[in-house]
Length: 368
Image (cartoon, rainbow, N blue to C red; front, side, top):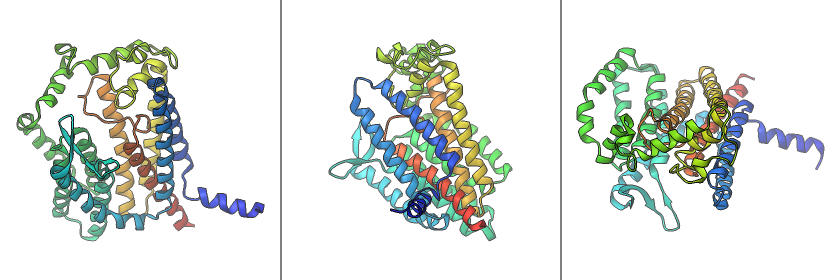
């Protein structure tokens, strides 16, 4: 194979990849893989599985990055409709695990339809606003609110409050970037505060207990408060420089619950300390900054609101996970982006990166 052919092949492979996004995402994945290894060093199969998850995620990112935003927009309506239908089917045929009905069995495996809505909802709303861009009025924001409320309620009823928050946040960010008036945002804030007592009565017992133990974890140290107590002990024991990789006592003595998934940040904090946390936060800030730059330079309304929603969704993931592990937010089961063990969330996040790359690189091609 000649050098010219190799050059063209290489150019074809990297043409729609954004260098800064790829570098930041790769760094987060590498840090996540080493932390998963430490958290599950006695179960090497999980390291192999996570490596495969990352490979699938990178492949999905590359494939999505090749699709122009105009074509991505066409997936909005069908994905949304399919996602809502699957959520309804979950209530009828769903598999119940630990009191929650979130999965559909398809024979050889189980799928969690709510994960699809993390991408489908912002895609649908971005398409909706793009379609009505020329005549955008208040009623269109109301319609968007209804489109968002349907999957949010269905997911919250499973119950899966963590995923419902992520889907709701992704949809709200689209509505916000589309030009939602500040007066409406303030009104929604007042309405939400007024409805808090009613919302409290709608929560399940375990959800109320999580909120109460957030205020005083020691009120139930071996029950609902256990997660917060152990994670904060691990974070505090890391000090400034950390105990070192594979040296976390809270981790390896198995005091930290769900240490390779939702509470992986506690593992990282114990081993890497305050300086490691600062480095990790910097990586997320760079990721968010790059995403916002792409959103600001987007050439269409669809691209702008979609890029903004995806970027702030990354912020929501990181903020909620770090907040619950640090004990400043209730435990709601939100993974740390590109760090936590698991395939579905990793692929969903990688698709989000691919969409950002598509918006960035195809815009550059148009300009040329």
